[in-house]
Image (cartoon, rainbow, N blue to C red):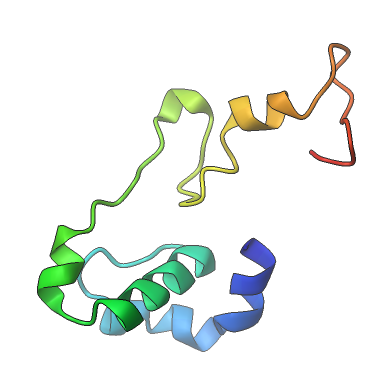
Length: 90
């Protein structure tokens, strides 16, 4: 998703994101893309107000990544007992 969002959302769109989404402004290209998809299906401000923004707990070792893939426990699940990446995942 992150790669697709980077290819879909331009730097110009990100620079103007506060104008496009003044309510709960996305802070990453991935969040912007997800919001754009949501808005396509639910175009009213009332719909935007009903969506709850998922914010990972800081103790999970996460940035503001909306996908949750950056959660350290998820990363650890792809490592073997010696800390090596398994099945090409990291």
